[in-house]
Every structure is written in structure tokens, then in C-alpha cells.
Length: 194
Image 1 (cartoon, rainbow, N blue to C red):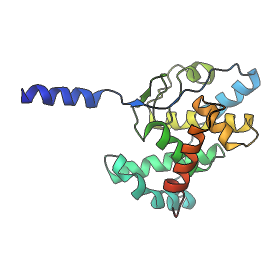
Image 2 (spheres, rainbow, N blue to C red; image 1 turned 180 degrees about the vertical axis):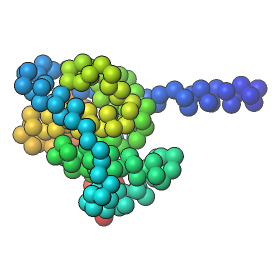
Image 3 (cartoon, rainbow, N blue to C red; image 1 turned 30 degrees about the vertical axis):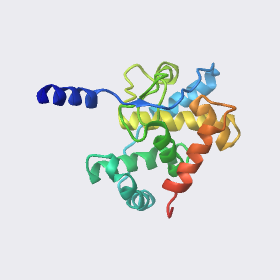
């Protein structure tokens, strides 16, 4: 009996965790917007370990995310990716951490009821819309890259209105709950000095 319970527990842990996040709505994009977003996705460069701003930010955030990763080095590598992909997309990394916190609770293999995947809960239709078939949304850097490019698109669509862009990202435009949760998480957990 004890063996069966242990086996069941290990199977449950191996299954992707369900996320409570909503889902980005599929929308028809102009050819130029698709091309621009696809170009942003395809331009991979190594993360510069000598970037002093990134190093300081990672140092400040490591303790906050440490328990969500296997070890401290894993937490630092994840934070370096978040910083790089956020700033590359012109986003504040603390806002991206708040999105990740609310969307997936930092679970790499989270799957929402709507089918959104990974840390930033990206809907799979984005791969066919702006990516390439080999893109794996459970791969951390790929997921972060997609999430940041998509959120940047929504922020541009909403002319810089963060709350409306967040609602679009979550597929809940017109409903204030999700944007308020992300803004609150950013202020209370992820802003440096919070």
C-alpha cells in the first residue's frame, strides 16, 4: 500500500501543473506586425554575464525566487534570462516577474485550462503565428522570449496602458481582476526594495 501511494505521488508530481491563468485571444495580425514579432523571436544572442545592471538585479532578486528552483544557481540563471528578455523587449523585469508569479507561480511545466504553457502561460497558437514549429514553449528562454514579445505587442497596441495590456495578455480585457493582481504582486513582491 505504501509503495502504491509513493508511486501515485511521483506520477502526480511528474504531470504538468495546472495554472489558473487565462488565455491570450487569437487575433489576426497584419503581415508587418507578424514579421516584426517573428524577427524579435528569432534574434538569439548569448546573455552577457558582464552586464552589471543585470548582475545587480539578479543579486537583489535571488533570495525572492530561490525556493522556487532546485538550487541557487538555477534561480540566478532564470533571473538572468528574465532580465535579458525583459529589457530586450523594453519591459521592466519586475513586471515580467509579476506576470510569471500570477500566471504560473514560477512553474516551468504549468498548463492552464485554456492550454497556455510554461512560465508566462503562452498559448500554443503563437508558435504557428510568429514562431517556428520546433519552438518548445516549455523551454525557459523560449517561453520568456515569447511572453515578452507578446506582452510588448499588447503594450504597443494599448499605447502604453499597462493595465489594458495585461488584460489582453490574460485574455480578460474589460475585467480588472487580473491586471490588479499583477500590479499588486509587482508592488508587494518584485519591486527592488519591496
